[in-house]
Length: 105
Image 1: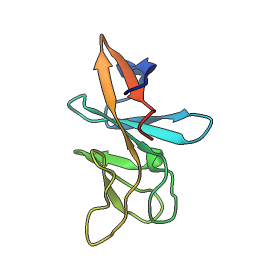
Image 2: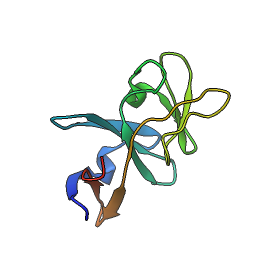
Image 3: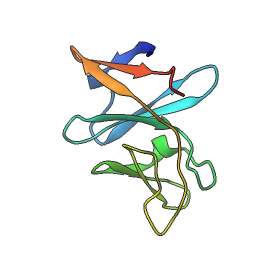
Image 4: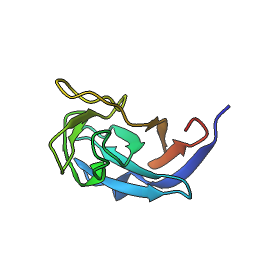
């Protein structure tokens, strides 16, 4: 079962940038790559909770602004030698609008 919620327009996320969705339970960072892929992960680095939305997007990963951990956007996994994982959320784009599935969190 899914719970798709329309959150914003694709154009509201800058290429190689992010936007934060603040739910009642969690802050979710939405990232847009240079080729318009969109990923959603918990806005907290698995290392020390740094705000991933403030990091630098490169390819399909983001670098945490606090300690330079690189996190894969597709699965939330830290890229070695670092180890850890943050939550990921399903995303879809329809007619230029971004939807999140929050039920799986």
